[in-house]
Length: 116
Image 1 (spheres, rainbow, N blue to C red):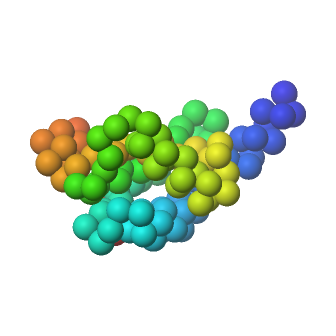
Image 2: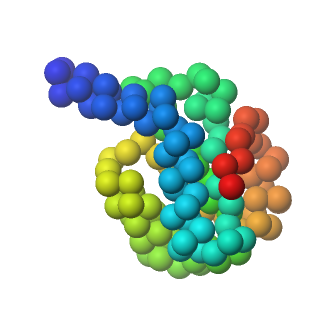
Protein backbone atom coordinates (compact mmCIF):
# COMPACT_ATOMS: atom_id res chain seq x y z
CA UNK A 1 0.00 0.00 0.00
CA UNK A 2 2.84 2.44 0.78
CA UNK A 3 4.29 1.92 -2.69
CA UNK A 4 0.97 2.82 -4.30
CA UNK A 5 0.63 5.94 -2.15
CA UNK A 6 4.21 6.99 -2.89
CA UNK A 7 3.65 6.50 -6.60
CA UNK A 8 0.42 8.49 -6.47
CA UNK A 9 2.22 11.26 -4.61
CA UNK A 10 5.01 11.31 -7.16
CA UNK A 11 2.50 11.44 -10.01
CA UNK A 12 0.71 14.42 -8.51
CA UNK A 13 3.56 16.75 -9.53
CA UNK A 14 2.75 16.09 -13.19
CA UNK A 15 -0.90 17.04 -12.71
CA UNK A 16 -0.14 20.18 -10.73
CA UNK A 17 2.48 21.33 -13.25
CA UNK A 18 0.99 19.92 -16.45
CA UNK A 19 1.39 23.17 -18.41
CA UNK A 20 5.10 23.33 -17.64
CA UNK A 21 5.58 19.72 -18.79
CA UNK A 22 3.44 20.33 -21.89
CA UNK A 23 5.63 23.31 -22.84
CA UNK A 24 8.75 21.13 -22.49
CA UNK A 25 7.08 18.47 -24.63
CA UNK A 26 6.23 21.11 -27.23
CA UNK A 27 9.87 22.14 -27.58
CA UNK A 28 10.92 18.52 -28.11
CA UNK A 29 8.05 17.82 -30.53
CA UNK A 30 9.06 20.78 -32.71
CA UNK A 31 12.66 19.56 -32.63
CA UNK A 32 11.58 16.08 -33.75
CA UNK A 33 8.76 16.93 -36.19
CA UNK A 34 9.35 20.52 -37.28
CA UNK A 35 7.65 23.85 -36.85
CA UNK A 36 4.30 22.73 -38.29
CA UNK A 37 3.78 20.51 -35.23
CA UNK A 38 1.32 21.51 -32.55
CA UNK A 39 0.67 20.25 -29.02
CA UNK A 40 -2.75 20.32 -27.40
CA UNK A 41 -3.59 19.13 -23.90
CA UNK A 42 -7.15 17.91 -23.49
CA UNK A 43 -9.48 16.09 -21.15
CA UNK A 44 -9.80 15.97 -17.38
CA UNK A 45 -6.61 17.86 -16.58
CA UNK A 46 -7.76 20.86 -18.64
CA UNK A 47 -11.18 20.72 -17.01
CA UNK A 48 -9.49 20.59 -13.58
CA UNK A 49 -11.19 17.28 -12.79
CA UNK A 50 -8.13 15.05 -12.53
CA UNK A 51 -7.23 12.46 -9.93
CA UNK A 52 -3.57 11.45 -9.85
CA UNK A 53 -4.59 7.90 -8.97
CA UNK A 54 -7.10 7.48 -11.82
CA UNK A 55 -6.33 10.03 -14.56
CA UNK A 56 -3.73 10.49 -17.22
CA UNK A 57 -2.68 13.65 -19.02
CA UNK A 58 -3.84 13.56 -22.64
CA UNK A 59 -1.34 15.18 -25.00
CA UNK A 60 -2.33 15.44 -28.65
CA UNK A 61 0.58 15.92 -31.03
CA UNK A 62 -0.51 17.14 -34.45
CA UNK A 63 1.79 17.13 -37.47
CA UNK A 64 1.78 15.96 -41.03
CA UNK A 65 5.15 14.37 -40.21
CA UNK A 66 3.65 11.87 -37.75
CA UNK A 67 5.11 8.50 -38.78
CA UNK A 68 2.64 6.04 -40.29
CA UNK A 69 4.41 2.92 -39.05
CA UNK A 70 3.30 1.83 -35.55
CA UNK A 71 6.84 1.02 -34.41
CA UNK A 72 8.01 4.51 -35.42
CA UNK A 73 5.07 6.01 -33.53
CA UNK A 74 6.14 3.96 -30.51
CA UNK A 75 9.70 5.26 -30.91
CA UNK A 76 8.37 8.83 -30.92
CA UNK A 77 6.40 8.21 -27.73
CA UNK A 78 9.40 6.61 -26.02
CA UNK A 79 11.71 9.44 -27.08
CA UNK A 80 9.32 11.93 -25.45
CA UNK A 81 9.26 9.90 -22.23
CA UNK A 82 13.05 9.63 -22.25
CA UNK A 83 13.27 13.39 -22.80
CA UNK A 84 11.10 13.89 -19.70
CA UNK A 85 13.32 11.49 -17.77
CA UNK A 86 10.42 9.33 -16.60
CA UNK A 87 9.18 6.39 -18.63
CA UNK A 88 6.18 6.04 -16.29
CA UNK A 89 5.01 9.66 -16.33
CA UNK A 90 1.19 9.78 -16.65
CA UNK A 91 1.11 11.18 -20.17
CA UNK A 92 -1.00 9.60 -22.90
CA UNK A 93 0.47 10.73 -26.20
CA UNK A 94 -2.06 10.85 -29.04
CA UNK A 95 -0.63 11.30 -32.53
CA UNK A 96 -2.57 12.79 -35.43
CA UNK A 97 -2.08 14.47 -38.75
CA UNK A 98 -3.80 17.81 -39.29
CA UNK A 99 -6.49 16.05 -41.32
CA UNK A 100 -7.08 13.47 -38.57
CA UNK A 101 -7.35 16.29 -36.06
CA UNK A 102 -9.93 18.19 -38.13
CA UNK A 103 -11.96 15.12 -39.09
CA UNK A 104 -11.89 13.22 -35.81
CA UNK A 105 -10.26 14.67 -32.68
CA UNK A 106 -11.82 18.12 -33.02
CA UNK A 107 -15.29 16.53 -33.00
CA UNK A 108 -15.03 14.86 -29.58
CA UNK A 109 -12.57 16.91 -27.51
CA UNK A 110 -14.66 18.85 -25.00
CA UNK A 111 -11.88 20.74 -23.21
CA UNK A 112 -8.50 21.62 -24.71
CA UNK A 113 -5.62 24.01 -24.33
CA UNK A 114 -3.26 24.67 -27.20
CA UNK A 115 0.32 24.78 -25.98
CA UNK A 116 2.02 25.46 -29.30
